[in-house]
Amino acid sequence: MSDITKRRWAIDKARTKKMQELMEEYDRDVYYPAKRQLFEDCLADGGHRGGKYHDNGFGWSWFYCGRCGDRYDITGPNGEKK
Image (tube, rainbow, N blue to C red; front, side, top):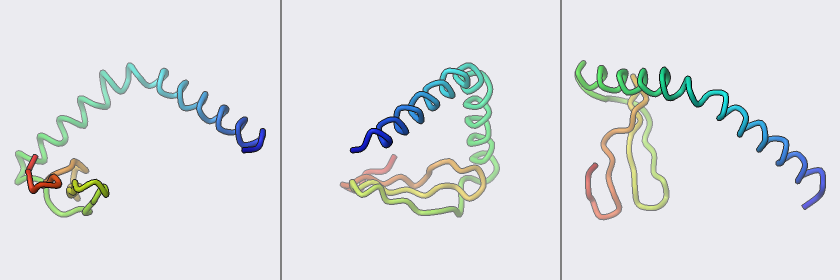
């Protein structure tokens, strides 16, 4: 791996770390509570529906709700449901 590549990764990693530090309080106090409420409101308003199918390659699959973006209909490698 070249020095340029290593430097680019170090620069990008430092930026990611700083963004996480700066957003930590906002995410904890505003973003994640708002997303949880959105998911709950979607369930209360008829439930998750539509969206995209995802298979993670390790036997788990699920859909992302077309309205709120939450995961639903999660199926494990042995057919277990979450």
